[in-house]
Image (cartoon, rainbow, N blue to C red; front, side, top):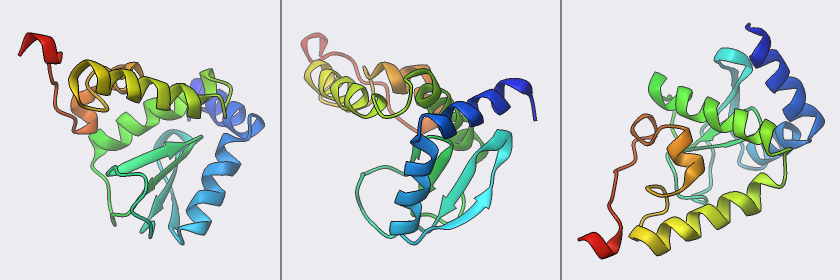
Length: 135
């Protein structure tokens, strides 16, 4: 594993975001599997919230599905790096704020969300919507 992924894994462990992700996966009765670049993939999550094909908390990628595409894993890996840079739990309110701003701009939670844009909208399977005032 590359050095940057080892650093990300340690940061997300120390900032408690990965333990939170493991707790969420356990509560949702997801099956854990090792993923690339130090990620932990949690398949078969049982709850419908949040509404997403997958979501990441620390280094844990949680999904209701039984498998994920390589592109989506790369996208979620970028979110794991964001968790490390946001020093863990402050990521939650920052992400919610970014979703709200994106909703206000274009009516979509991802198109103008900087976290999703930096993780690559296309890799995450998100549409690119223009601002409501330019339609």
